[in-house]
Length: 292
Image 1 (spheres, helix red, strand yellow):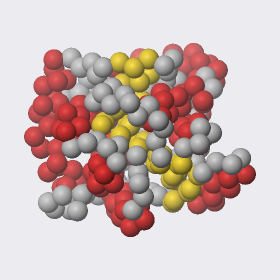
Image 2 (cartoon, rainbow, N blue to C red; image 1 turned 180 degrees about the vertical axis):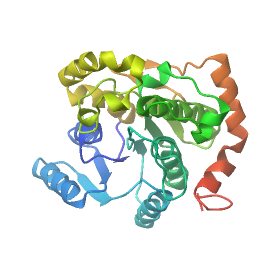
Image 3 (tube, one colour; image 1 turned 90 degrees about the horizontal axis):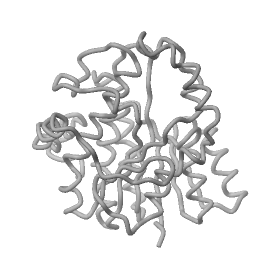
Image 4 (cartoon, helix red, strand yellow; image 1 turned 120 degrees about the vertical axis):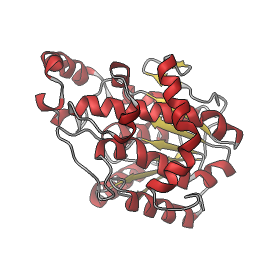
């Protein structure tokens, strides 16, 4: 069986669009989001010309207000949502903050996707659905400390990006069993290397000095990887309703691996776990729960 309805955030270009196209071409109903209304409506029209069931809803996940506004609008529609794919992400060459005072890399890659997941949890629980977070292999090249939960240090855009994704993995791991008990499975998908509108703009200033010599080789590989290949890990998890293993990590090539964390990372996950619900509520300025 395949899901009835999938929501893909940040899906008007790049990997998100490729994920949406892969699902829609398999006759899955897809909601796509993006900040650019013209681009989103054009994608919707193109999809319908191809006979796909695609609906665009404008959404801005760069701050908490936009994230929660989108969730409220979607919950008002009350769709039978089967899968949420948190594809929105970002990396910057310098340190910045959201209007809420959060470091923007952590906010966009971790906080806001988890806030959206909590806010849409009632829809997903009703359908015993899935939440799929897009991740990156770069998280294997960094380590986090307790201070990194708030991104209190900055060394390079890519290192901070990698740590934000690792924080997301750790938080997701801490929630996997608990949310599965409530009927919602959390899984992860790594698209691998891809040439996207984001990666095509990334120059030397995004990388730590010791890794800049690798940039030409990385970009050469990215340009050879079709977006459909990068989209498949997330799309395949969304299409496979039978595989409900919490914390599953899908990578290109069709491989699905159990979550692998070092003892220290597992400790950090446990450190975060008891406070997850309260922290998400505080981040969103909603008490006691943003599900209500």
